[in-house]
Every structure is written in C-alpha cells, then in structure tokens.
Image: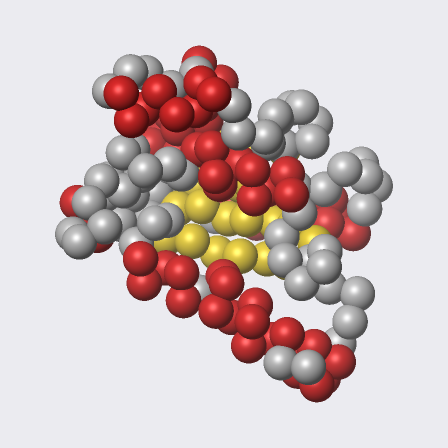
Length: 158
C-alpha cells in the first residue's frame, strides 16, 4: 500500500515526532511505500492566496499545490499526525487541507460526493492532546472533535 503521512509539528524532538518515527518503522516493517509531508520542515505556506482561486476559472492551481495534490493522488491511504491545539488541528494543517483538498479537485459536485477522485482513500488520524479524555468530555470537546474529524467525512471531502 502507498501511504502519505501528513505530519504537522514545529518542534523536531517533540512527542509527535516520536509518533512519526514509530509509524514509519511500522510502515517499513509491513512493506508499505510511503511519503512524508512534513509541513513545517518543508515550509508549507498555509495561507490561501489569490492563486488558489484560479481553479474556479478552470485555470491550474499554483505549482506548490499541484505538487501536494500529486502526493495525495499517489497514495492509497493517508495518516495525519498532529497535536490538538485549541480544540482543533494546527493552523498549518488546516491551511494544507484548505489549499490542497480543494473544491474542483478533491471533490467536484457537493450533490454527488462519489464524483470526487479521493473517495476511496483510507484515512487514519493520530493526534496528541494535553488533556485526558475525561477532561475533554467534561465540556463535550470530545464530541466536537468527533464531529470535526469524523462527521465531515460524510461530505466525502477526504
């Protein structure tokens, strides 16, 4: 299987990096091919640009986005590794999703989610949090996370 690992953490010796390293060892031992999109190390620009909107004029996306989309097209599955910051993913990852998993490429017709070329991708989310499940559940943040990370899949965007 070909797997794209989208890794998002700015600190080179973080716990998230240890998770990434362990994940890559497991993928290697299982014989999978993989690529790592290390968003901070690669200096990915997460902010939308005017060039990101040319897709609505049937023009090609910026080269950096086309390169990221090619990585996604290459894989059969994706693994996202990131910390939970303010009850959500880091802005770097949100920007990657906004810019790369874009309308007109990842999904084409909101009325027909099966029209998107990424509909068959398997996705695994591995996130770390500075709070226990009980602490997150006390204010229903666990439910909010579930909705944000899982229920959005009903739209077949990823």
